[in-house]
Length: 288
Image 1 (tube, helix red, strand yellow):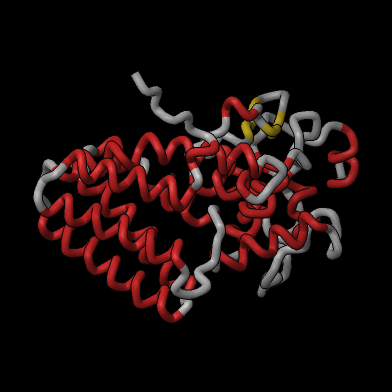
Image 2 (cartoon, rainbow, N blue to C red):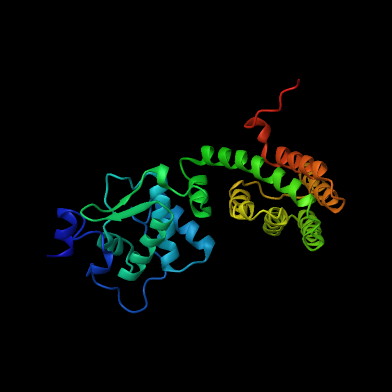
């Protein structure tokens, strides 16, 4: 049976065992970039290339990005089976690349391969919504508003608690690294260097969660990093907002140095309100 006939009949030849698909391997020296599913001019194709280029991954990473974005955006739904041969032909990649990419997507909860059903997209309720890749794909897709609101609400829960806990641990090594990040951010802000500022800011927040001494919270640091990555807002110079944010960062470090848990938590809440506008999505405490 030919590949075309197999795809047209059922989309699958067996119980989702993609190792058995015999479609032709590309010649030596595979293509350096994937072709978008919908053609070179499709919006989805442009999105896929942007994500892959930003991560600097090979063909495997590019295919994960392209398929992941298509699934999250709804362009690949549960009503359409994911046929490995079709994927390989559309994107001009090998069986190995397709197999490994689908395995990654399955680990993220996006797809499943079952006997007599094949490889299909799973419902949103099965997705690992805390996976940094899925966070990014949702943040730049049709669900962008919901994703950014949910991230804001989650950070409002995680980070003030982390700051409070960190004040009780007295980790001088981490406090020094936090201070170093503030210095880097200050210099980057003065230079209008958005990339350096963003990296130092992400490192600051990850370090703070690490300093909390709670291993379960530590596992959530990737969520915060992803949230900072997708929140947008380039650094344009020494504007008031940037300087105010630096001040809140500094007050967090000062509170940690003296073991002031309440002060650290308060400074973090002020930072999140100013940086993320959480006052629009998180109800203010009621006055009694």
